[in-house]
Amino acid sequence: MKIENLVKRFGKLEAVKDLNLEIEDGTLACLLGPSGCGKTTTLRMIAGLETPDEGKIYIGDKVVNDLSPVERKIAMVFQFYAIYPGMTVRQNLEFPLKQQKMSGEEIDSRVKKTAEMLRISQILDKDAMSLTAGEKQRIALGRAYVRDTQVLLLDEPLTNLDARLRATMRVELKRIHEEHKQTTIYVTHDQVEAMSMADKIGVMDLGLLLQYDAPETLYDHPKSQFVAGFIGSPTMNFLECDRVEKDRGPFLQFESFTLDASDFKESLMSGGKKLVLGVRPHDISVEARGAKQRVDAEVYLVEPIGDQNIIDLKVGSQVIKAVAPRTIKVSEGQKLPVAFDMDRIHVFDKESERALV
Image 1 (cartoon, one colour):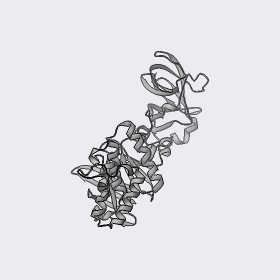
Image 2: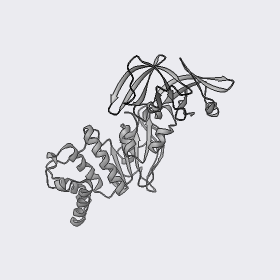
Image 3: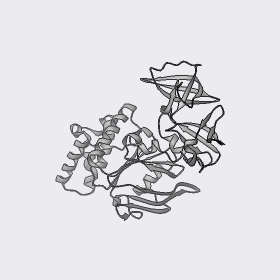
Image 4: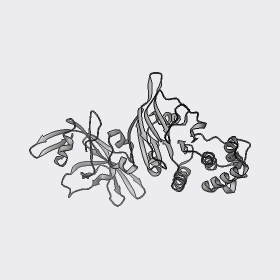
């Protein structure tokens, strides 16, 4: 499916701004971003629940702007899953098929296949309202999968589940997608969901699609400071600096230290003098006494998380996070040298937030 120059306004608010996106058949694509970024509005326009002010939506090779939701051959699962009361699981799955006036044989076949796919065959004859939250969510998904659709739309379907059940359902949804390869658009604000499930992720903010790429590309090669900060846990550290020229080439001048950036000379020249260094917590070495470019730091706080420690480090007046093995023993107030992996740093132009390195 494809979206061309899509715009949606609510009064003076432009909720979606000139959105262009092409999703290959069989792809599980996530729209990821904070609340209010335009991702759900985009999904609702694809579904036909909102009317675009500008642009075109293609499902297959057909423009569907003027088609009703039923005519678009899509199925949608919402954040608040709706279960029909007074019906069994089987009757819930049969309902949309009966609305399409399918034969009893076809309905039975589809319900059986969908129940096996979602692993709910053993509860088909139970009262749907008596089930657990996870089982109810599977039923809501089943009502979408049981239909013959071109695109499946999922709007934060796991939000109301507890953390353990959410993790289980992520695995199940990924398994189902790998088996059936149905084109799916999944809206979420949870980057763990997006990174673990999606073939491709579109990161949105303030109505703009900032980057649409594979999860590993977003993590390793973010095109903007927003994308870099939104992807990854713990989040990327950002340190403001100035580009200064010396005999050997450009240096990054920080409040309390300087880094040789001559390896990135050409890339840095495309930006301004005011820059922002981005470095992920996993790319900071603690107690790096043998490193060429060491930075003096003080341990501010140690947060144990199982087999690792998140170490908050005070560098000048700023606090940054590093992730280190539990075997590295440090204590609050300890002064030590740290080093950034210069092969994995990111540098952004401060004004435009565009990635330079």
